[in-house]
Length: 231
Length: 308
Image 1 (spheres, helix red, strand yellow):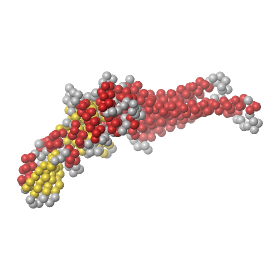
Image 2: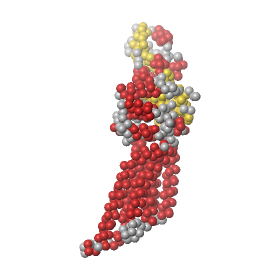
Image 3: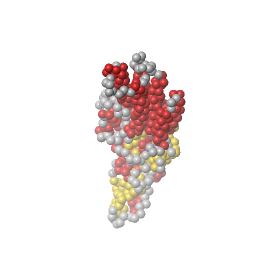
Image 4: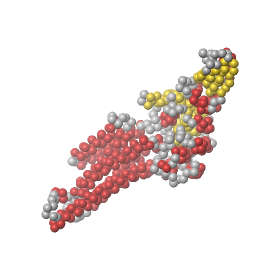
C-alpha cells in the first residue's frame, strides 16, 4: 500500500512528460507512415508521377518509416529518461521537498524503488507500447513491401532500454553531492559512453549485454549513493 | 517506558570545514514541549535533521524513541511527526490528495476525524491545491497532516516562520492541544521568542553550533537579568561579579547583564563597588535571548546552574 502510494505519486508527477513523449511519438510516427504510404502509392501508380520527378528507388526499401520512428524513439526515450531523472531527483532538491519525502514509514530503498518503477512504467507507457503498436501496424500484410523483421522490433526495445540507462545516469549525477565539473558528471558521462557504444554495436546480443551490465553498475551506484546521502 | 525521548551525545556536524554543530548534548524528556532557540544559522535545523537521520553526524550519536537516529526503522519513523522548515509539501497535490497520500503511511493510526476537524478549524477545503495556498495556510496543512496520525513525538523546524501573528497563534493553539494528549512530546525550533514563551516548558539555546542553555523556561527567565547601578563618583574600571555577561557604562551609571547571579551577590558587589543605588531592569524573553547570545558572550547554562 505504501509502495503503491509512492508509485502513484511519482507517476502523477511525471504524467505530463509521459503524455508529451507519447504524443510526440504518435504524432511524428503517424506523419512518417502517412508520408511513406503517400509516396508508395505514388510510386505504384506511374501515371501520377511526372516524367521530371526524381524518385530514388532505394528509399522504398522495406520498413523505411519504422527506421525513422526508431530514430525518433531513440531520442524520445533518452530525452524522457533525462527529464524523468531531473523531475524525480533534481526538482525536489530545488523545491526542498526531500525531507518531507524521506521522513516516512518506509525505508529509503522503497522510496527509490518507487521512483525506479515509475520511470520504467513511464518509458513502457510512452515509448514501449507505442513502438509495439507501430510494429504491429507495420506487420500488417500489404502495407510494406517486406514483412517486419523481429530484429527491428528488438532494436526499438534496445533504444527504450537506452532511455533507462540515460535515466539512471542522470539520477546518479543528480544524487551526487560533488561539484558538477568533477565526479558528479560520472553518471551522465557513463550514460553517454554507453549510448555511443550501442550506436557502434551491430550485434543485438552484445547490445543487450552492454545494457544489462551498465544498468547493474548504475543501479548499484545509485542505491549506495541514495542510502548514504544527506537530505 | 524510557522517559527520555531524544538524547544526543557529543553530536557534531561539519559541512566541509564549517562547524555547524559542536558537541551537542541534549535530553528531551517525555511529555514536554521543548523549544530549540537560536539565531539564524545557529545549528537548529542541523540538529533536527541529525536527530531524524536526514544528515549524518561527523562525530557523536543521537537516539530518538530509543533508536539510533542513523538507523531509524520505518516503525519508529511512523511514531515521529515532522514538520519541515518552510512547510515544503508537494505543490501539485490538492489537500485531500496529500492527506490520502500521507494516510497510506500510517495504517491504523491516521485519525481522519482529527484531520477534518483541523481543516475546519483552519477554514481550509480538501479541494484546494497546495500551490494556491499562502504560507500560513500551507503551515496549517502541514500541521494537520502531521498531527492526524497521532505521532508520539512531534518535531517541528521553525514552524511559525513567515506566518502572521493571528495564524501563528492559531498554529500554536493547535500544537498545544496536541500535547494535552497523554505522553505526547514536542520539539520545535524557533527564533520567534514570543512563540516560545507562549508554549515551551523547557528550552535549549544553541549559539553558533554550541549548546549554551538547557533548562526550564522559567529558570532561564529568572536567571538572565539586567541591573543598573548608579555611582556618586566614577564607575569602577574593573567589574568582578559572578555571572557577568556584559556591561555598558556611561559616566556615573553602569548597566550589567548577569546570568544566575543571586540578589545577595548583587547587593554585596554593589556595596563593595560603592554604588549608591541599583535596580533591576525589566526584560522580556527576547531581550534576555539577545543579551545571552550577544557575540561577545560565551557563558552557558551549566555555569549559571553551578553559580546558583
